[in-house]
Amino acid sequence: MSSDMHKDVGKILFTERKIRRRIQEMGTQMAADYKGKNPMMVAVLKGSFVFMADLVRAMDIPCEIEFLGVSSYEGKATTNTGAVRLTKDLNTDIADRHVIVVEDILDSGLTLQYLMGYLKNRQPASMEICTLLDKPERRKAEVYAKYKGFTVPDAFVVGYGLDYDEGYRNLPYIGVLKPEIYE
Ligand code: 5GP
Image 1 (spheres, rainbow, N blue to C red):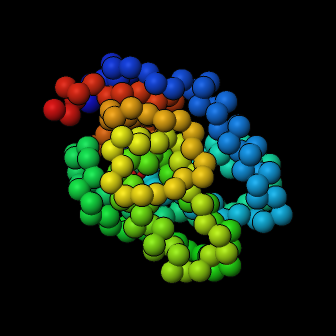
Image 2: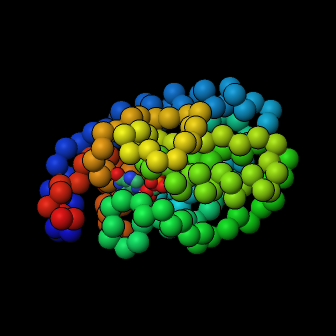
């Protein structure tokens, strides 16, 4: 990584302002859909920590938050090899709760396919997926996300929680990482 993170980003896809507006729309819709249901928002670490923080503040209804840790990419890889590892389990019982799984990006779908199966075993009352980004071109597993922020092209993106080798998560916007950084 260069000392100036911004230089490693080739193209900005979504500005801070655009992200804020879209999340406000999503939060309004989700608050209407889940009114009176006290949903359990389950963020998938680490990538969705920024999105989760903004999304719950855009939902003007009572809700609870939880975190699940998964690791799908090994080290510096930029594609999913299919092996999903649970690094942090839930601390709360989700049986009979309305669960919303909050993800940063839906790419191959392998991570969410695994997680949905895992969570279903705990018998929630309902379960839906909310993903900030959707990269449909690379889908391998069929996964349905009821709430989607933006569609992205088949490129490796960073910022707003998304990393490359643990860097760039604190960029306030989402952009495409220059290929020379990981090639
Ligand atoms: P999937 O299992 O759907 O292939 O991948 C989901 C996970 O892969 C995401 O939660 C994210 O951590 C990572 N991922 C997929 N595409 C990208 C990308 O373009 N940039 C970054 N930083 N991570 C990605």
